[in-house]
Image (cartoon, rainbow, N blue to C red; front, side):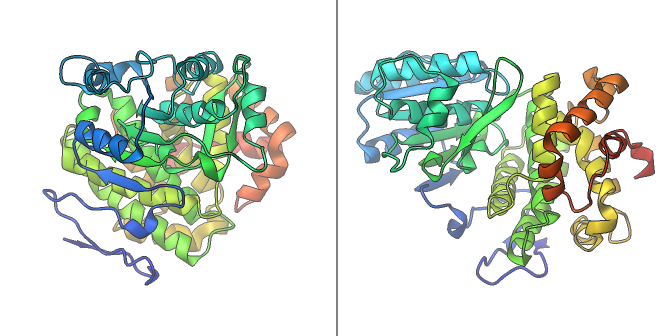
Length: 415
């Protein structure tokens, strides 16, 4: 079937033909400044070696989540190939946990610095991809001291900023951290923090669905649903323009179609490749002046505070947030409904229905052991500490902490 989105600017030229047996390609005009190549649906090992050769890398530091180790260690695999080539800087580093916890991140920074690495390869999800950005910053400091969060943040504000070592990002899921110049971490006090700078954009992305084999549902479908969140955040953002919205709607179309295919066949490499393309299109729309979106800010806080994966944060809160500001963003939400093929159905209901299909993705707070009392305290904390920012990002104003609480606890049946 032909898949196109009305109101799409000619400059993007994004009209796709979508078949269940055809993988989409990523339009090269969407590759952001600072990034050289994005490869989708190619073997990650041969592609990584080819890119390392082009970069003339001599000491490569590899950072991965633990679940990816089986794809990297052993005869004929990446780590062995780097050893054979004489360019492996250090043993595989797997210290990064969910959310980019401070302790594991600083350990990775120190190991990379001690190895004298001139290139970083990151294999895994969003926390690992962001960790690679922090590692590159720390490698550029020439500091003899151990890494600290304060030291990394200070390094991100240097002017002029020195050139950073290149990063080859090899994601195993769809969080899309590798497609941005923002990096997040969770401090030991369970506060979400981070840095942002154009120089943090990874140099190369290689997405090979082989690395997604055997992923638990909460990772596979949770990170894919984050792409939906990215698209909606861009479409309904107060600062979005027509070009941003059209691009995000295009990404959302691809995500919706292929998420439904993936539910039927969770290991389908073509559907996963297309989800990667749709997610990339969506997150790049969001990063054209609309980052962070309302969902990002609240869900990042919620994730750090309650140790909830961000995919489930989206499953719980995305449709509820849309419902809260629907009267103020109806024009754009109606376009979301049209993309889903049901113009007469409110968009929050369609998003909630999509989330309900996704295994491993929570839809209610109680599934994550977040109680009503915890939500009241969280809502008050958001209001006391972030209300100005929230109202900059929301199409509808929050006047009290009760407004936030009411939004977070809205019944899905009422959407």
